[in-house]
Length: 485
Image (cartoon, rainbow, N blue to C red; front, side, top):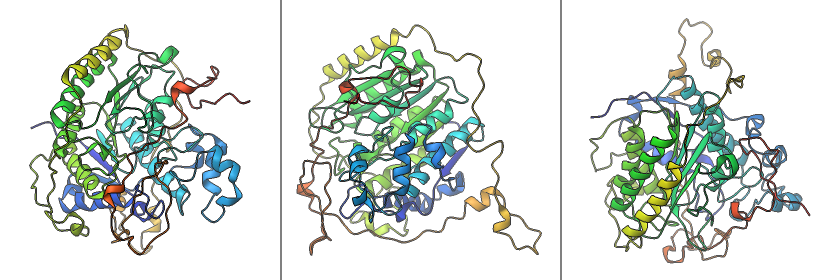
């Protein structure tokens, strides 16, 4: 049995109330479903639960442009027609629609990741979990792939205040393009992504030849994969690659994005992983005993997403003996007809040949060997902590003035009241976009599983298409601007 670690878990009770749009594949309800499953297994008794502090507009601009954040804060579904130029400029609409509570949703997602990073910095915990985070496609001044604010970049920037080197690992089926782009020019962050790659598959980036630029050259690791990736092949190449990265880069902190769309049966995915294969990657990263920030990500079959994140929570708190029969809870009927935790792989053929995978690993390994030194940071003034010197909770809001009893921060943040809300099912139609809004119909309560589009779009903004890089930007690569005509 591995060493038990201190785990802090972040969940905001309002996160499941948001809905992107009718029929949209991204459903925040999956986060609440995962939380309910986690509680039903009793994992909440073995880790500290906190309500994340909502990220401020100022903190979002540590990475995102001020104009973009102001737009997200001010726009609503009722007023979006008044901003046609901004809607186009910031790539909002269609795939990433404007919905009620959008800015608050972004504040919750980003706040959990920054809060987790802050607690890791102060050594209050060994592992921080924020399943509402992991939105890895968002760019400095545009939304992308259902992502608006890149909580991962904001969390890494917080970690960099204390840690000289941070490793970012992405096991979502889609390339973590937003995070890679943000740190493309620096050697203080190494990004490592395992993803489906091919013409027409979103976001169209993540070629093995994409290794970074200038000072960040050789600090971007991309392992492109084909359809049907199974547990055995995936875990093997994952362990070999991460072992090499840890050997040559020697990070002092790790951020792990656990997108569940790489599982078998995902509506927008094309891999054939089970929970056990996906979870072995999480356990392997945990075994390095580094400060670890664990985030969510993609995943569009809600019951599989909640299964995955509940199972991986058990691995992070070292609860390996888990019954396959799900315990009763508010969303129990979502898991019919078997009500089991683990998934069975499909009969999908694995198009990834072992020789090709080995060849790709050798190329990555040679690049890592060229890192002749471990980058360090000279003496400098450390930026101010995100939440100040100490976390202060206004307990007087919760207390009876005549009582001498005072709640602790842990007690206050552990009071999570579930709201039993169920979403309408969705109809998916084949479109040129990732997703296109559709009005409800009489048959909208049924899933049209055969018409699911597998992201047949090649996004226009990729790292390879940059015509201009502003070399005067900060080292963290906060913004990459296209050359204006």
